[in-house]
Length: 192
Image (cartoon, rainbow, N blue to C red; front, side):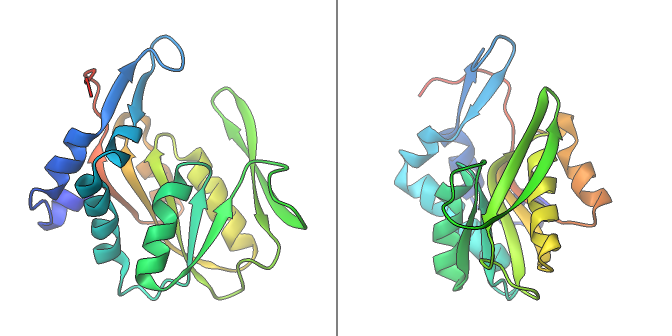
């Protein structure tokens, strides 16, 4: 589901979309980088982003917001505070002190891994996975697997931006997970 599909595009979605920047050929030629840093420079658009997620999930009895490194750390904590949930960072290897549980996953160009503190999420916790963008869905699926290995119930996944051409939504759907996004990716360079 997208925010605009159920009538909440009351101008906030347009403001969020206009606050995002597209940077061509970054980090390598051919990539149209979807930059959220300009959204963070616009307090109203940033607040609207958080508010839309909170409005969508506030009645879902979520006990854990699991934010994917690094931009999930920007959007996850304010959502967690607003709905009364704990925030759990899902990090790249060797970034968390103490005992961790790991989930390796395959990317189009290699492999990667997410880690979470042992005991941070309990059996029966209701979790929401948060990141800035979904492309192929590989990282988000790894996050889901990590949470489900500790017997959390993953309620859904929330991203600011979706790249629909890369079919991450279909991948999540095949795992039975809802994806809620605010905007689709843009492919025209923007200046901000």
